[in-house]
Length: 502
Image 1 (cartoon, one colour):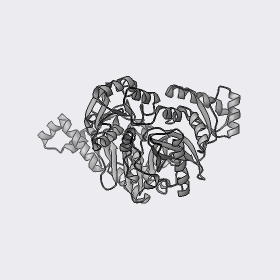
Image 2 (cartoon, rainbow, N blue to C red):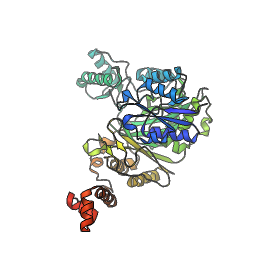
Image 3 (cartoon, rainbow, N blue to C red):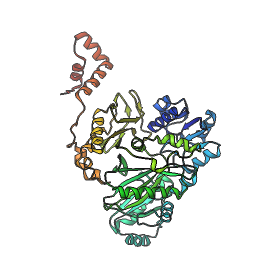
Image 4 (cartoon, one colour):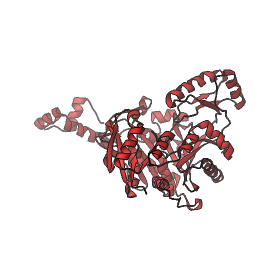
């Protein structure tokens, strides 16, 4: 029985896991790097242990140190969250060899599904459709060109050990092929320590749709329906929703069945996600399997009513799944927006700074998974994701309207963020009508960047005044001058700093 879990992660996902631990009566252990010493997951956990300096390689990726903390703290199990060590087969194996429970799949499953080429071969054997493609590409340029011509241009070069858009190149013309392969191999080597790449047919106007699955140690595997993840920038998801507004019920049934077959082919245990590309004619093809919890898992939780983290813990404890497939039902519609500390006006450059004010949206059907607070300093060392905004409603139209309202209420000052950019997405006709694919951002770039389709293109005047008032109180010159002259703080601030809120 698991009594104490070390959460080998940080930020919002660490907070989210700790919440499920607390509800389950399980003690939690947080780890933190030097700049994360005041982070919310540190404050919220039952215990918190320093893991190292800022660089991830010396802290959140330091396997030896994490295992040492787990033993010293008396933890029974380790939950990796997502990112960092979550899909590291060596870490999963070392956790188990240390006599601890790894809350995730077996190392063999992580290894198999982490190698994109091996996964393709396994899916073909399991009867799961795959995108037409190649095996590992060699340095023979003539052979590579022959392969590309057989598949048919355009083609996509992909890193075998890749993810997140790294080691990926779109090739539309034969003369671009070999230089693109060289660049993809170099990027893959730098990102993953493995320069293996392969080639796939590029699907025009594809949808990125994934299926959430859970498997237990007793051979039971169930799915929790699909998530539409086609709103992407640089191959990174920004907005997700469930159910997909694109696929039919017939395709949904086929896709979820194939996802379960994919998981069964590696005797999968724990939470995982089988990802597919779906073309304009609703033909679907296996893309990859993520052997971990996904960033967008809350929308599945909201439509099924099942806590996936608690389910992970129970599976890791050896318990069988408590549901049969027909007992799992979806209700309503959910949407998630990822809130990043980044500047859309400067090519989405990640931001850093101190959060001066934050107002999180509330109300019916609204959930926020975050970790920042007023006075918290966001650093440049880690991923700029600071929170996830999730809404639920009875239908998609109401869910879109609710997300618009929630984004309008969400206010963060002190650091640049993408909230207004997300508002523009919610107001774009293609999204409102559910008629979009993975090219949505590119197709609507002009309106998304200009804000011409957004009703709320500037901060509320009340927010501006509140910020000015705050600044005036910390400016000693103003405090002194105003006390002496009887002037209004915010007017005096505007005079000295040439600021006109009107």
